Amino acid sequence: MNQGRRMGELKKLLNNNREWSEQVTREQADFFTKLANQQKPKYLWIGCSDSRVPANELVGLQPGEVFVHRNVANLVIHTDFNCLSVIQYAVEVLNIRDIIVCGHYGCGGVHEAIENSSQGLVNNWLRHLRDIKFSHENYFNTIDDPELVNDRLCELNIIRQVKNVCRTTTVEVAWDEGKELTVHGWIYNISNGLLQDLDVSVNSPDSIKPVTDRAVRQVYARTEKIHDS
Ligand SMILES: [Zn+2]
Image: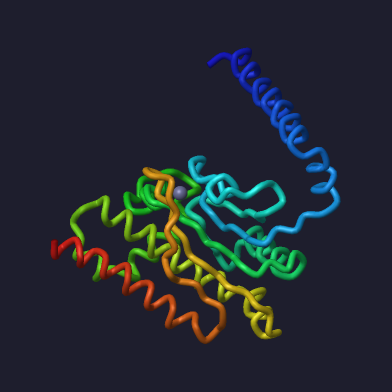
């Protein structure tokens, strides 16, 4: 595509923005002035960078209502100061009480991790997903269908990331101080636009293991059901 055409397309984005801003202001005159003074989101969303999974739109929330962190395959890594800073700011400054880790079926990051194709730098990031697959090796050895492997790894990844959020120093300190804070795991289906709760909501240090272990068993059971039918 030539540069002139690309510039034209970018200009269209700026025009879209102007129209959106005018429309929002028509519907609620003080919308932006209110937002400019304070943001009070109730939720932290940790999701995938995938362009098909935009946080606000999926859950019908307006600007100002959800604090968002997205990266490839919605990973929460204990040395990723970007993600850790988002969690700290969300919990300690914004006083957010619900953190949602949201993955999605058909995740390209999960697919690449399974294929282990050479994509350069991002392979290092996706190594975390391969580690999750290895830690469930016996289970994955029982599945032949590549699509099922992908689906189950998407689900198991979310459960692992819920656990990782729970084990961040920020969340440990918050629970230690008696703050109410719950970490949830959801999965989004790109094919029908629906979110599903993976029933892995953790609200205390003691419930990390039982809740995440149960969620893993539920994932395993899903495949058994398919085998039985
Ligand atoms: Zn993804």
